Length: 172
Image 1 (cartoon, one colour):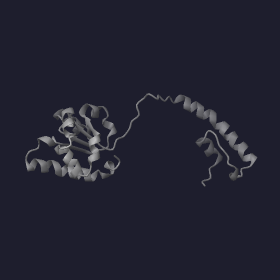
Image 2: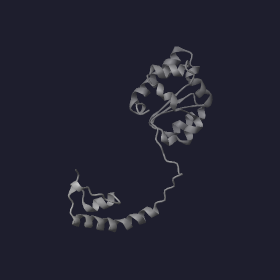
Image 3: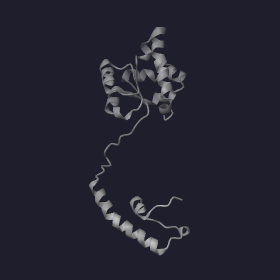
Image 4: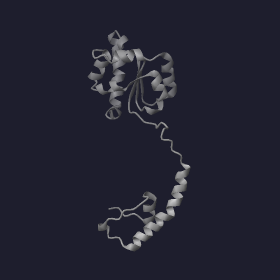
């Protein structure tokens, strides 16, 4: 058991429950109560100055997101699409649940640690480059790739991106 000083106890807890097996004497209990009584007004003043709005949105971090437009999102989620085949081949089918549209992404851009943008418009590509995000991959529309060279050029960086972000992907 970690021993705490009485002043630490007063800072950490509003009330203290003493268990019989702790064998604390009446003097210790009175001292602890006195210290808590001394610290409580200061804590109440400090907490009164902090205004917490329960309706205020809290920043929630997400480990991974796929950004695309609404038309492609629907096409990618079809079970036999090239996108579905790619994520299954990379053993990451869970990422399909994390596809967001460009406008939803821009509204929450700071929340994502790993971003894969697919088939987005040139303005959004430019915007993403300006963000300077450390963990970003921009890929062309997977469904529009026709030649083997185009597919290889898209798949090789994607495979490396997924491999380097396994820690983030494991959180999904």
